[in-house]
Image (cartoon, rainbow, N blue to C red; front, side):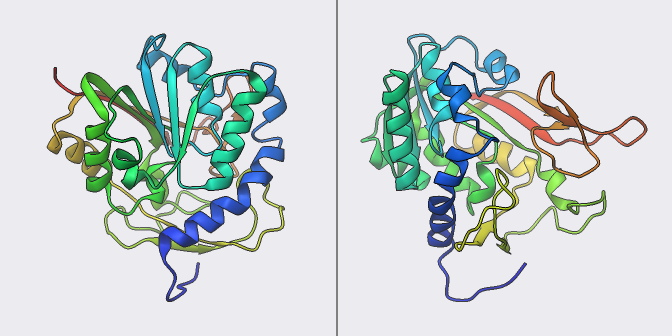
Length: 272
């Protein structure tokens, strides 16, 4: 980690993601060819917890290059994806055309989503894994999300569990604070989809958000929590000792090691 000065966190993160879009598209990790052939990128628990989407309007915040967004569209949702990366949105649009799926993709910072979407509201606001860590202000995010949910609609969030972020990358040792507003600042080449990829835009900012903060802010803006589920597995190799279970794509603790929360999901509804 390093502490660069005079760098705007959002601009650093945008440059970081812009550079990684073509790397991700070409990677085995994302398997775009498999997606073109019909592979579903959503987790089974996401499908189950969101419920039927056919005929419903769905907006995907921080959609990257749109594979999850388009997976929802393939099951009948009327989808809109929003992301701050122009290259990501361009690829999402191209991918939608390639697979013959109708979808709308918009370039905008998630905090500007209400204006970018001209005040439209949706049956489902979907936020996928790996999203909140890139945002400094959960209260502002919750307000935006709530404004996008129509009365009677839902917000659905699946994400990495903040508890796992306090631990080291190679051991179950506490190295980071669970509480605190200061970002972690990284200066590392490569990407989770290709650790050896040559990159130059390597500075990125990440913010930890305690689970209580996320739930409380959603309640504060008038959304009613329907459930909060914590899971004892990761969807990537969070620690080198996790065991991969190819039958469901999860990474779990070996027998005899402690069970800890690695992911969570919640659903919150806006009253009619």
